[in-house]
Image (cartoon, rainbow, N blue to C red; front, side, top):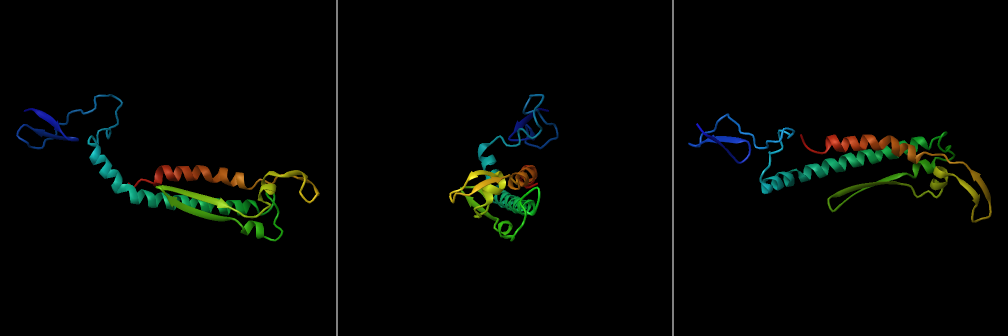
Length: 164
């Protein structure tokens, strides 16, 4: 009884009957069992294009969630020491999120239009344009929030984008 491989992981005998004897397609000892799942590039492209809308939607949801989480963490860090103290709450409320999709890419920007954001984050020593002397220490609140959010975002993308 002779077996031959036809297409991917399907064994048939000479009479065309399916069988359970499987020949090794990839003889490499370290090959992953699914390494030969797609031998036909057209079949692979069709499978990937079918996943496209689901992957884009999931990527957008994960990116949006973590951008909003970053905004909340920045606002929390800007609510007193070690970050800046709250005087009116306008600076904290000025943070916003914008998520865009273009060319198959998803991006999120967490931003503020408040002019004091750079000074609060990095500090300022010197004379401003009005001639006032400053020796303002930094009150980091953006960078710590980013460092706290980044690992969870990358893990969510790694584990949650592709449908199971």
